[in-house]
Each structure stands twice: as structure tokens, then as C-alpha cells.
Amino acid sequence: SGNNLSSEYIGNQFPVAQVFGRETYHVNELYVQEAIEGIFSVKAGRLCGGNDFLASPFYAKYVSNALCGNPISIFFNVPFTAQPNATWGTYISFKPHKSLLIKNAIYNANRYISENKYHGMNFTFDRTEGALLMTEWAYLLHRMSLPGNYKIGAYYTTGTFKRFIEGKQK
Image 1 (tube, rainbow, N blue to C red):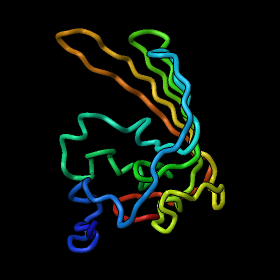
Image 2: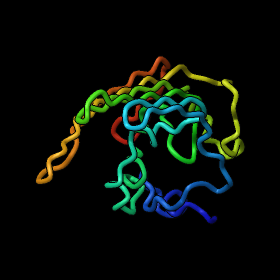
Image 3: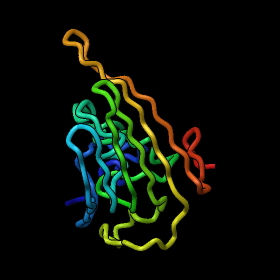
């Protein structure tokens, strides 16, 4: 509970702490999932794209919400969701080889779902602004000396949105 220190007192773009979420209760994800352990997974329902594509244990090392949780800069350019906001979507992951992971998703693009008055319970398609399609391909290293991942991804949105460039929206 409480107020957002960044928006009320500092006025910065990136919140100083990830711990502040919302000023109200909020329902997060709600979906059905089918999986073949370690090879294939599909889920559909109310999803957070940030959990599917932007989450990393590395980000939890930071306090600032510029990185902690999900790097929030993407939200200024794309109708992307992360906790506590979810939108309708379908997510598929496929691991055809132990070193290759392919993820694809389609989400309903709606910038209004994050409004507090809905508490995460706006399940309609009202005010939809197209679809957001995402993909990520990861090469997973399994060497003991240098473990790591190499990832490349892309997104495409069918809607028209304002662009965030150099500190202002155009």
C-alpha cells in the first residue's frame, strides 16, 4: 500500500523501486496450459508478455524498476504487458534440441487494461488496438566453463501507437 515515490515526489520516468505495484488489488494471470515436459508448451488465456519474454533472474539483482522485474522501457513503445497486468493471448514454446529454444506468442494489444478501476478483471475485447506478435529464438550453451544464452527476438504490432522518442511521445 502507499504511494509511488517516483511519480509523486521525484518525477522520474523509471520508478526507483520495483516493489511498488499498484494502489489497489489486482488479478494477474489466468490461463490453461498443456506441456510435454522440456519439449513443447502452449498456454492460452490472460497472459503477461513480460513473464513469457522479458523475465530473467539477473534482473532481480536491481532495485530500480528500470530493470528489476522487466525492463520497462519496452512499455513506452509497445502495448506490452507485465505483472500485474495481463491481456488475452496465446504462447507457444518449442525446444527441438537441447541447445535451441523457440518462443512465439500473440497478445491482444490494449493499453487500457492497466487502469486501476478494472483490478485485472476486464476480460472483454473492448478498445482493442490490434494484435502484438512476438518471437524469440535462444541458443542455450551448456558448457561448464562458460554457460549462457544467446537470444534474438522480434515483435510486430498490427495497431497504430504513439512512439516514445527522446523523452516525449510523438
